[in-house]
Image 1 (cartoon, rainbow, N blue to C red):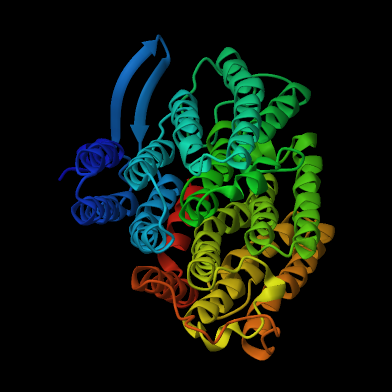
Image 2 (image 1 turned 90 degrees about the vertical axis):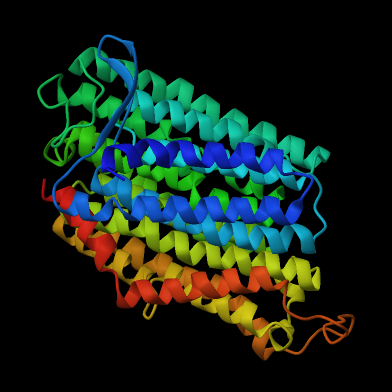
Length: 488
């Protein structure tokens, strides 16, 4: 299949899969097989784009011209391909995990759940392959709307309240800030197309462009930069596979990907490095990194702790973009992938503990590792990636981000990264240490019939844990793609 066709199919295929899932709702085994099969086909299609992109090809797929100079269109570039590879591969394992989780936890409305999940992946592909800001905004909003039913899946008052917070923050930031920034960019540059080196140089004073950068950064509310972060812990009322989608596969990664893409293809690194707001926004990201880690310490609920960990880790990527140098961009782009594999492993483990042991609080997980060794072993591996130490892939992205701070002459930001990694070590490794080395509490029943979660969940955890370690040994694909971004 020619690359230009693959681009369009990559966005449309998950939508076809969603309709198939709805049509096959009466036959759960067939429905779930079709869903996972669609994910597998999507990943293989996206994988076919690697060779052409490395050879310098940039496939385009126009969709619709809305106004003169404003159109919906798709175009593949290296950073978008990295995001698409991560999202399409993790859809496979998340789909497998979700089958085991949803059945093991006896969740209702599973057909609706899997259909909206597929639509969210379609929107993520659209963001990854967006040719311009208008297309990116359209698919960005599509993700917000199609994940709302997933966040409110349980239909409880708590879920509905979380959904209101979710929609309120994400729509207000995107419409209030991001849309304004896009219109302003069109007025200044006369185009919304993503271009090598950016489109804003020489269009306005640095003061005006500094304000525009602020609008873009805070307009990407999905990046959860403080103070626009509350939606993320609120959304933890959703089923664990939704948490995996939010934290690793699509939603938050769309936010930080947007900031990276705007930094490189709208502002350009040369211009970005001269803007005063880039410096203080980098410190806003640094503050989010530290505060997110500190709040994670206070959470006994495992999913809540992981949510604040994600808030912290996302700002690593935002910081990488705002460093406005090659190492920062490479580190930020690679952290999209490394954090995704590490964090999804952690959420898979958290969901497995809920399904198998019905526990959500870390203080009640003493001794659980003796009956669920695979689950807590996977949690340990995922933790290493978030901490940023070998043999997990997160070691590479944090190394490059550290080099970016040195190149920018920001020793203080390097200290922030190091302190955050130490904090992550303490609040994450507490979980497997309790599980493996502490005796169960007297009122616990860990020995009475508790075992690993359903096999689908266990297999998914093993795959992502092995991939997390594999990315330490073989980071070349993602590194090569990001070097293409900064060598343009």
